[in-house]
Amino acid sequence: MIELQRLHKSYPVGTKLIPALRGIDLSIAKGEIFGVIGHSGAGKSTLIRTINLLEKPTSGKVIVDGVELTALDGSRLQEQRRRIGMIFQHFNLLSSATVAENVAFPLTLTKHSKAEVKHKVSELLALVGLEAHADKYPAQLSGGQKQRVGIARALANDPHVLLCDEATSALDPQTTNSILSLLRDINRRFGITIVLITHEMHVIRSVCDRLAVIDDGQIVEEGKVIDVFLKPEHPTTREFLEQVSDSSELARVVEGEIASGSRNIYRITFVGEQTYQPVLAQAIKESEATFVILQGTISRMKDTPYGQLVVELEGSPVQVEQTIAALAGRGLEVEKIG
Ligand SMILES: Nc1ncnc2c1ncn2[C@@H]1O[C@H](COP(=O)(O)OP(=O)(O)OP(=O)(O)O)[C@@H](O)[C@H]1O
Image 1 (cartoon, rainbow, N blue to C red):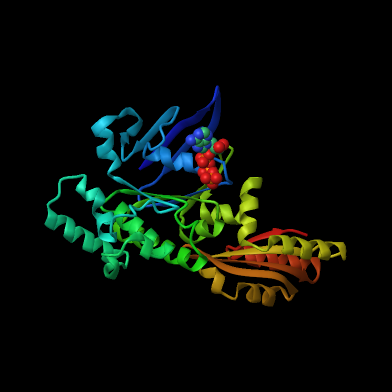
Image 2: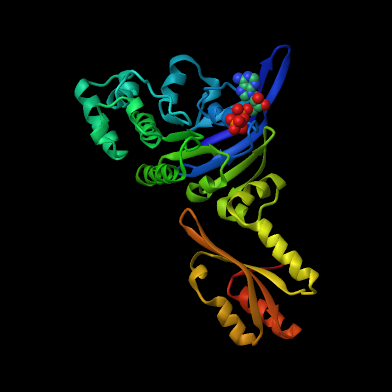
């Protein structure tokens, strides 16, 4: 669906070239919600803006829906761009136009009758829940409402792809959640591929199927959200995961236990339906070991529940072995961490 191949982008600043993207290769499948996370200056905005060629790469290819955008210009590029909607952190609405006029704007650039525009605008405003605000001006709206206008406008030409450039970064947590759930809804109902950039891991966790971590213009880790969350490999990914876990507190608990001589601390990971099953209780019943829970979390990644328990197992070496074998036999991941 979206293919980025050996993408490089450098910005000329004075006599120097500042590298922003340094060899990006990325494939995003049709219908996916794909997140790109990175620190400030990592290259996220540059990356997302190359997908619709708002930013022209210095070298490399951008292919969307089988069409190489980097090989097009003029009206052929404009035509392909219409299939890619975009929303922005600061909404980029026309302040002197009403909500309805803002949403109608992209339609006025293509051939539509007045009646068609009117019908489409009211459909879009209903989709984003703003029917009652059609005649207001952006200044009369809250941040969340402004972003809803941005979304309606981005969908006006029935795009196949929606690019979200830090779309929730200017919003409070509750409004962020309502915008994220609108994006999920749009993705489900219309099968639109969504690419979002963010510096917030909870945004990735609540809506994305897959993610890439970008650092200094390069992708340092990529995969399904659930896999990356449970087994992060790159230090930058681990740093971002700190935002959504209390792992530093956990590290202190585990260190304390290890210092006190315990050597039987395990992290047990549950994914999906297992999260709600009494598997640990069953395993313990069989082995007759006992356990102390040091830490536990249950959360949700998009639609998948998952949980992690850190336990100290107590019993003979055979009982401990049996417990681990019973848990592993039920498909749980068990990792010795102390
Ligand atoms: N128009 C520009 N001219 C010169 N340098 C630029 C320009 N835009 C971005 N850069 C530089 O390119 C690098 C990547 O910037 P980019 O905005 O893509 O990062 P980002 O991850 O989106 O950061 P932020 O989260 O702060 O927006 C940075 O070093 C930045 O200073």
